[in-house]
Image 1 (cartoon, helix red, strand yellow):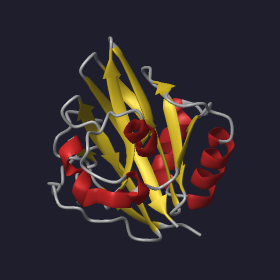
Image 2 (image 1 turned 135 degrees about the horizontal axis):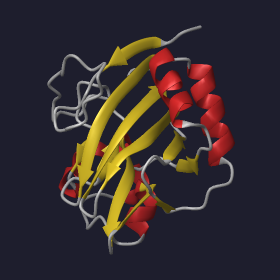
Image 3 (image 1 turned 135 degrees about the vertical axis):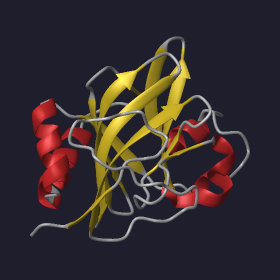
Length: 190
């Protein structure tokens, strides 16, 4: 069964694929993902906005650390910009290593598993566009079973994630510099 597909491109991104004709303005508000809706989007993360929250597509996915007090379990991942390398880790790990300041109690964060997928870029875009939840869940479960965190990111890396609250997602690294990372992504809350 196909999930309801919700498409959006984050307003803060400069990613332009030929098939992208319109941009939907996103909100800084916290709008949690809705069970059963499948989201596809692009986003850009920087040193100033390194927190990745798997939210409804009308919400920005990238946020500064100071927003954590409002996010609770909706904050999922953290991009670490360090010595010309960018890594990603679960938000709990970032907190336990003192990277988030004192904005929130770590008990509010979900458990998150990360993986590096071996699927091709072409297959990633097929999954992203098709919205088949069973395929996304299978890829996430397979690749999240063995990866150690944090994960070093490279151009065209495909990263998968799962949370203990039923979120499954993956993203492809479109562009990476010393100070920013641009991704194409999809996720679902089951």
